Image 1: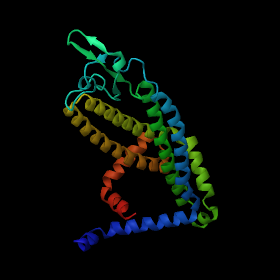
Image 2: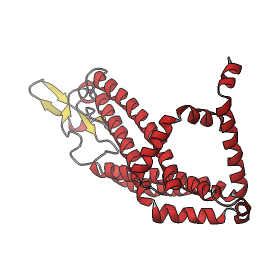
Image 3: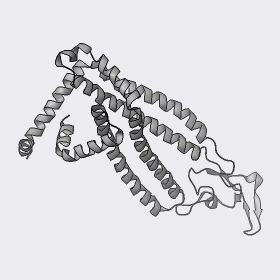
Image 4: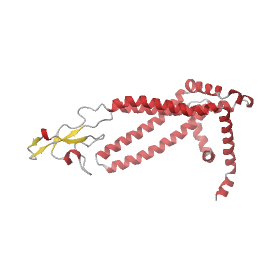
Length: 283
């Protein structure tokens, strides 16, 4: 079966081998391109720690009235059971409960002492954090987009150089030209592609948030529905990431805006789906 499959795909396998040969020649002539992932990772880490400091401050701003201030007669009423949410844990992030035996309150209706009280959570999510999270996701996607565009642009500049000039540049000029193209000519297109990825990622995070709320409410049906929606959005995100990567290649190659490049990339993938799969599996 493997032999038959290889015989049927012999032309595409040859194409994949030729692509790998060109890639090896490109890396040989442009060794500095190997530093790009390291620089990209360093910038991403620096951005993450800078964002984490501000996010930690926002998360710690728990409103005073977030948790109920009343007292309850037993632990089950305050904390809840496996099927019924408690008065203190009916929304996420959930807090905790404690027994304040020194300040119990007599309840005339039930004829019992109410000693169980709510302890607020250590963090909460509000609109400010949502905005901060979106900014983080957008910048993170933009860092990835710039890296993908840089690789595609350096390859384009190198590929169309005369053969006698390729090795002489030692990778400096293509990288400098690509930096100029990324930050001066096409930053808006890269930011728009990153915006689409960040929007889907934020929607997934919001679905996860509501799933946790359903979990706190002991609503297993809604929780399952939200889990399925998260899987669907994960597939959408994967497709957008794949299309964006090829759109950035079209931007580097043709110099068009994001929408035109994404359209070209989509139809190119559609017409050459088998070739894309073969090259990707052998590269």
